[in-house]
Length: 78
Image (cartoon, rainbow, N blue to C red):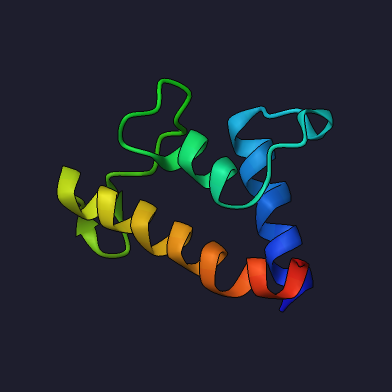
C-alpha cells in the first residue's frame, strides 16, 4: 500500500510541477494541488467517466484523496 501512495505522490507532483526537493508530501501535497482554495491547484477534467463534475463534486474528489492519504498513507509511512 505504501508504494501505491508513493507512486500517487509522484504523479501529483508531476501534474502540479512540484519539485520533490521541496519535501511537500501527503495531505499537504494534496491540499496544495487539489484544495478548493489553492492558487496552485491542478485542473481536473470536468468531463470524465462520471460526466460533468460540479464544483461540489470536485471538492469531493479533493476530500476523498486527502482522506485516503490521512487514513492509509500516513499509517504506512510513519
